[in-house]
Image (cartoon, rainbow, N blue to C red; front, side):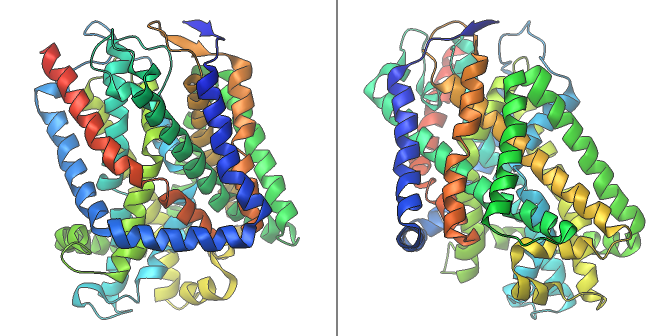
Length: 500
């Protein structure tokens, strides 16, 4: 595969403009920016709330239709092409590109936000309430979320390989023929500018959320104050790691780190199961899956037929989060899925993605929940007293060799962030290339530069020092995609039908 060093200047300027547009007001007016972001988030939820719930359910049904219809046999790159990567490496890259460190934080504490809600007539803080709370974590990180990642992945992958497009752009999902270079049309430029805004805002917001979690862990281990300088240091470490990874490329960098990350994560989880109360953890897992089965339909429809503060605060936020992060994950998945059928891509994302999240919530989350149920630690109160960032480390310190678990936890979060955002750096580097009809690899120095550029927005968000605002930034990136996703589906189906 040849290197492509030619740059599309219009696209490059749009990326730099998007970064300046989002980061500058936050850096200069952090307090006012926080208020504006919060009020805009509430306004967005008020208008689009139920739409997200309906949209999520429809997208899950659609990707299942693609997998099991005749379209599922469409092989990316041609019928004679084999996969570029082994199943393990491919699945590792799918999972790591889509998670970004969040799973390690939320799997520990998410249930604590839900246990007192009293949903579906269940008494708050009862045994069933705790089981439902555990089930909701699996639900929010399960099939529907990964389906929302799958839409842009297959919508871009089909034209990308069919027409041998030389750059990774969201606008390529609008292509229905090799001759119509839609990426250079006005519509294509608009779609790509929206993509860049979404990419910078969503990825920056996510890094801004999870780097302080690493800082809290090292603060606990080293006995130092958790302040802005510590968070910036952790950001520099993460940036350096994913700069190295993306500089090495997909096969020698991103693939290797993703494989290592999955192996270390599995060892970490099964060590908790071995040293913790395995019987209680497994029992809670069975009970939570029972509640998930009983309430799955109600979970998917809460907030549609009537207003629900819980759905607005959590499920709608999550669906918006998956949608906002979908293009960046989808483009990377498209890039590493050559030689696989659409059925493999759909089922790979749904099964491997959901299963990975299930393991984290079942083992790490239910270990944390068991501490509260047995009176060893009031996790819910700890969450209120010391905040979200330090609670996870306090939970891990209750394990035998707690310091080692906290150290491993911080390392895994760093590597998860790196493996997620080296894929984003790769996409940005490919995105600013000239559009050709020859498959190319972005220049190494180009990939390296974007790895550092990505750290600008999270550094600005540290000035606001609010996890909630970082979450809101991600959600605000999603509304345009509610319109674009159905258009991408239409164009993809047109291409697939014309081929058959």
